[in-house]
Length: 301
Image 1 (cartoon, rainbow, N blue to C red):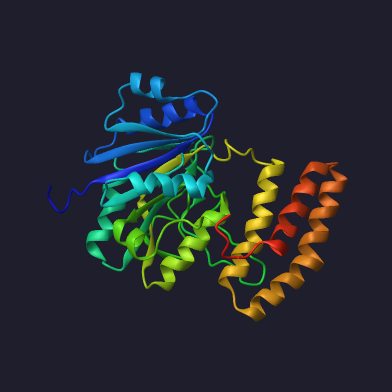
Image 2 (cartoon, rainbow, N blue to C red; image 1 turned 90 degrees about the horizontal axis):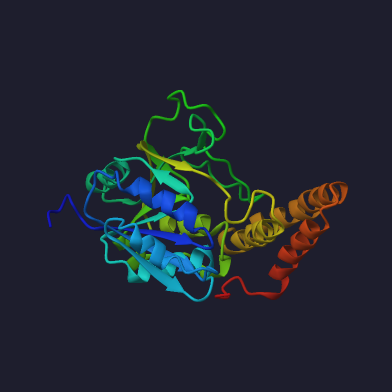
């Protein structure tokens, strides 16, 4: 194997989404980079997708089946432990790749040894001219919120300059084996949401950079697993927003955050859910908040 053609392990999760996963795998047939393997990690789907995926004869693809849903964090970590690649491409199954994606995501690693992760431009599949992600702005250490560069903007080339960014997007990120060995993997106590921010913070603290590769492009169908406004999504967003702040801010920053959360965020959410009669969402919000009162920020679950 030549140095410029290292093995890339593509790790993608599926949970009761065989149709969507097969659509993703169909898009990988057109990849121009050929030295890859695909690990489809099934998280205990009701119907085992192995036979259907194997019958389609997708190149370099194997299905790994877990009897338990390990979540986004645990599932990807499980896949990474079985990956053979020098680089691991963590990618949502509700995406469709473009042919040169792996080639351009790999390129910056050869040019800058401080780069640990590269991410492509992400556009919405349903609105293919509209940007979802072109890098992240810094996370606000007083509110626990951030915004993606270019988010919801029609792509007119305004985000075509590559460069370092403040966070990797869990939807599509190429990670070097060096990062996995030296920094570790996703924090499994997050399960899903905010996990890429926690991992990004650890990667940056270790002295590496996260790079937005504007030449790369992927299309994201977004929120197919959880649903855009599901109660379980409210639970994990709330829970992990607080957990991230507990793990990654100074005491005075966290004090401001908690004050903001109690006086602004919590009342706003409560009123919103009550007015919309989304009582299950409100229960999930309260449950996600109180979880942090009883569980250590370093707990593995």
